[in-house]
Length: 179
Image 1 (cartoon, rainbow, N blue to C red):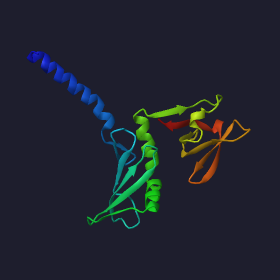
Image 2: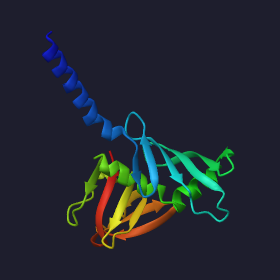
Image 3: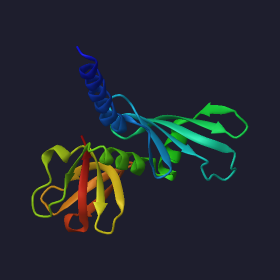
Image 4: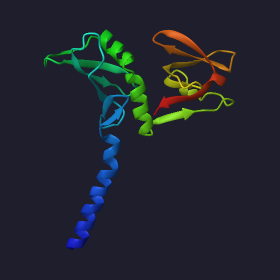
């Protein structure tokens, strides 16, 4: 292989790496730094300088599964000490600092979300029983397990933290599902 062809092959290989790299690179969403795993679905997320009552935490780090659920976390304190979070702390900080919304925004930017926007077509069956993100016409986000309301095709419910919330389909802009 000549030097020119070898240089061209190296340039093509570097261009391919550059195209793949942004999808797996660390990204910032809503003050969260998100580092995806090799599959691009699970991730580790960090939130620097959280606004807490004591103001002694330097950052929060969480592990997120492919379904968008924070599974564990570590608190780093300003004095250098660190400790694992309890399950309750993981849930609290995840909700308080909107980690779930940041994670869904991250996955949407990667193109790994299926979306349903029709107000007249039935909700796709593969969305039912799955964790989805609902975006209301007012721009509010809701994340939970979708269920249909029997006998009422214009209504559906989300199980959000073990509470059922009813939604009227005409009040919903979009329903999203992680791919």
